[in-house]
Structures are given as structure tokens and as C-alpha cells.
Image (cartoon, rainbow, N blue to C red; front, side, top):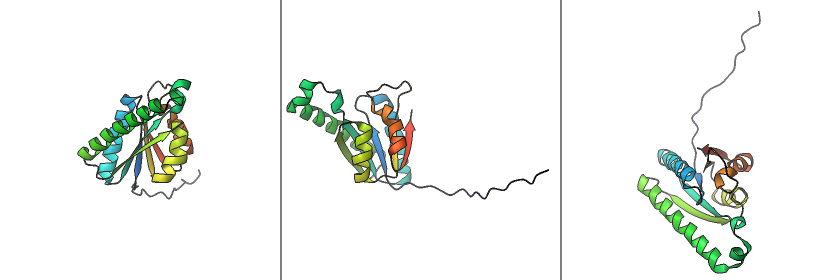
Length: 155
């Protein structure tokens, strides 16, 4: 009979220092669940939280993308929505909240621009149960694969 194998494992507490929540302006259901989770974690750990939303320029038709007013209006709409999220997070008890607006493909912009700038050690993103290619939640697998930090997907 073989000897019982021994594993030298000790459980250590894991603490995050800063988190980033990705909000999809087109998918409030999964974004709301992810936001609630992010606020809970940020408040519990008493850590700074970044909130990012991306203007998906690929969703604009050629007329819209060439019209500075339409792009500026959409950018302003996203920024205004982010301010509401910031306010709600602060009311919940998250002390330090920073909004970020990006433009382009959400997964790429978050990994290549927002994460290096904000330097979170946790990214939280919502994902619909039935993915649609146009929602940031579908970029969760991209973030999980390419983000240089932990990623939590909330459904």
C-alpha cells in the first residue's frame, strides 16, 4: 500500500488594493449586478474603485462616426451616467471613486489603456447569461485572458 501524499498548503488571506469595474451603458442588468458586487468589495476592503465605460465606436454607423456632434453627445451621455455610478458608490460608502471613459473595443481599451493607467489588482465585469456580441459582458473572456490582474465575472 502506498503512503498517503502530504500537501504543504496553508490558507493565506488575500486582499485587493484597488479595483476596476467595467460598466456597459447598453447592458444595465449585468452592469448593475457587477456594480453592486464591486461596491461591496471596495467598501469591505476600504480600497479605491475605478469605474470605466467605453464608447464603442464600432457600434456607430459611418454617418454617426463622422459627425462630431453625435460622438460628443454620446461621450457626454456616458460621462453623465458614470457620474451617477460614482455618486451611488460614494453614497454606499466607497470613499475613493474614479471614473474613466474610453473609446473603441471595450476589451482592448480596458486592457491596453485603462488598466495600465489605473493599475487595479482586480477587474470586475458583468456578463449576460445569453451573450450578445455588442455588450461589454461578452468581453469578459477577453479581459480574463489578457488582463494582467485578477478578473471576476458577475452574472
